[in-house]
Length: 113
Length: 115
Image (cartoon, rainbow over all chains, first blue to last red; front, side, top):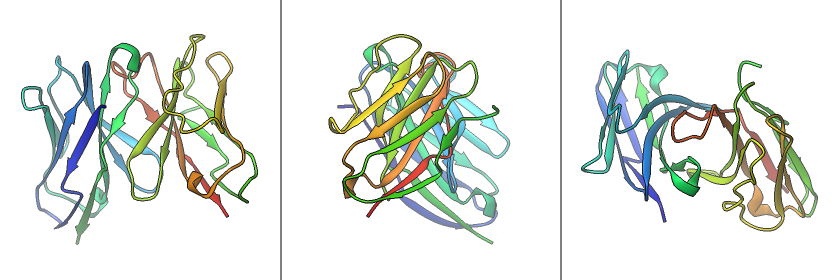
């Protein structure tokens, strides 16, 4: 059974801190690793990492895929209170899985002013 | 529309009743997925539609759950004889092509509460 595990489950920091969120996966016929940010409602897409794109960056957020270690990290620098959210990691597989997402439990990030 | 649209946003019903949830995907997105998010837990895959192909129903938890999609448009998820353990947020996502090459984009979900 495919599995995705995130750590830590929760994290409390102060504005300006840098945080690193971890995600490990065990997925048969792995294709891609995605990060989402979930505030009140819909998960919002952040990054998609594949073998052809193992590092992505957008503003203060960046992510790296380590296919050897079967893991990924999401870095947020100079955190702001608006970064407070649940960060979800998910993996996809090819073949008959049709790209359905297998999610981790999420990391709850709280940024205090 | 600009994004994935789901309705209703909230639904409260009594145990044993049937409910129908609706999802309107992003225009042009051929793939549509339903997920369930129970309180404090990650998202669980329920069902996948791709064009006119047979849906992947492997994530449906019981035969009380069913879903339909007309072509590449609206999908409905139906839960019959609801139970309290069905209480959750039901999220719909769509993507342009299969989800391992194109990211899935989510709607705001339907929060279902079974009394």
